[in-house]
Image (cartoon, rainbow, N blue to C red; front, side):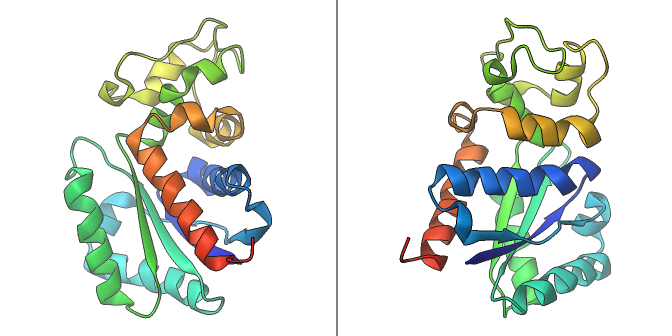
Length: 201
């Protein structure tokens, strides 16, 4: 059994991320082999820039993971005002291991934001929650600097992350979304961890 303890930065991700992880496990044929702790929500600015704050929440997640031989998953958006994923990912991993070297860590960065993954798979969301039936993604979804706003402009009511992240996560086509490199990377990493934790499946 793979036990994951996610650290996330938004209210919406508190329910969306477990749904996403379970969908990946099911798609990989290993659904029963995954257990997800309720995500620990942090303030991303403090988490990235305040070492005491970072240490506190990494330690909290690590303690939960340690009791069940689990893995801490740090999942953040990687916006324009932050280092690129190539720099931020290894830096977060190094810092987390420096705090707690006794548990494994998985770093998952959404470039530019979680909703960018939905934009990549926009065709699969067409006709749902007020979105037009002819919805298509832009040619370069990663170029959208405000994916939340992109959806909000196409819905009769504004896009609400607390409501729509979970709903869209349950609906969007994972294979379409895997055209986004950060989605594909997360999918493959979760699949590999599941295979390692459940070798008989």
